[in-house]
Image 1 (cartoon, rainbow, N blue to C red):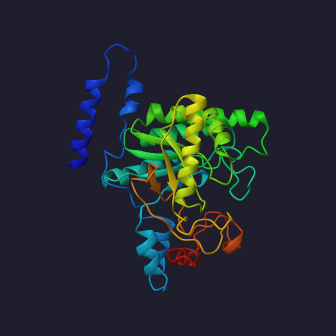
Image 2 (cartoon, one colour):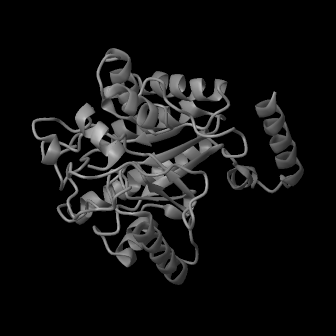
Length: 326
């Protein structure tokens, strides 16, 4: 009932503000989107990789710590080629969150040429046309339900090994993705990814964001799958906004991935030892929100304390140590 009343009030308010005969309904709907106000907190995925591991290993001595400090916390669900029928996968996930009156956080991670320079998480759709079909189905599956979606982590920091033609093609795909969500998922807040404070300088990233259509996004994300503390990310986000304001005439709210930044960074990005989980909050102390976008305990690839693993594989020993910071 609480969700229904919030939705009805929001819808009534939107109708009062929609100008008659102006053709501005779509723009006004985007402005009025409020997935936070439509829900009662973030959704906790009962089928996350930590939750699945805990369920399968109840007698393991590490299970209580992982259950209480990671598996029971809200975090994002990543969607890509492994998700199968993307419409069914997204629809099921968002539907479960909606039934619980909670706000789901989703990651779209299927752009062609993904992780072109890093290589550990390579892959993606086979062509721009295939990606358009995929992201259109993704947005359609959310529909009018509330959600947050981070669109293609790393995609705007990964330019150093790409030609200008490839960059232009990628920007076109990201702009189209934003248009798909605006048209088909009007209660979704979308975020383009801005890398992290040590990867691309803020002025350059602001240019990359604007080139990919950031004006049409709700905001941008920082520190996805990385380890930098909130202070550095807030400074970075503010610096990006300073350039966006000065050069393009707008600013955007930003969110920080705090899933592994409790001990800040030691300068390594690929499964470094001694990291710790951070806080989750719908207020961010300078950022819009603090979110777990990467799943704590999931590997960055065959490197560091995850030697022998593949990107995305859940490593219980890494997760366990991340609870305590060693």
